[in-house]
Length: 352
Image (tube, rainbow, N blue to C red; front, side, top):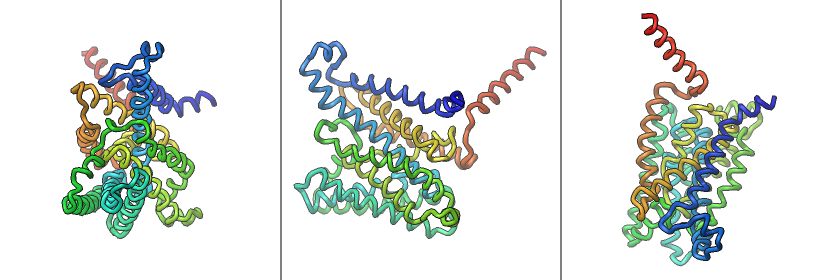
């Protein structure tokens, strides 16, 4: 019994260990030298950098990776399409519009006031997108995200027009370019909103699974389809908006991470949610560390690194989904097949 439980959660345990190790090393990667010896000796400068910059940055990275990955997983499950995410569902574009509206109407507003605008527009934009796709009679696997991309581009175009019209382009760009270099103590705490949203996602995971089966199936099981649908989309929108306000626009995380995990663990949201959250945090953390060291002492925005990797992985995922659909890769069967074929080939060569 215990062996079965351990085997079932082995991937989660491995991901958690990897994340802990990477998190520890990331605390000591940066332009200013911070090391264990200096911290143990009570070096005040190193402790200031550690507490005011390195630790807040790590916490923001973990919240961003986990939050955006889970937001993508929720949207994919509720929309019944593996290519829907905050990027392809107009959620990020809508959150950016909210920031612009806050800058226009409340130029001296606090980060929490701007977050309120961003929350509102992100929720409305995501709801409108789902309202659109619900009225598409023939939902092709590629058509739904294309509708979301086009809708998001329309919102981005409107945002850029008003930003240019009122000379807010530069101010907006500082909020929408995804990077962690400006994350310091006192300016990132809003991203903690991701934590209760993740808890809600896990609590209602079974409801999201049921709604993902369709409206008739949900009604037969006594689950309120529209309530769960828009509740789940609201959770995803709030996560996305809180990340955009603090860190900026970071694409592809909610698209790539859930698909990669689903390829090996299937589509059951309760079973894959911990792995999606952990792998998302690892993915963002690795990309951030690469951005810090590749042209040190300068730093590349994480949006650039994730954009490059994301576009490559997105093409690969698109080809895989078009060929295999929602079929998952079973690691054990895959390895047995590969090594079995190789062993047979070697035995054949030896016989010759």
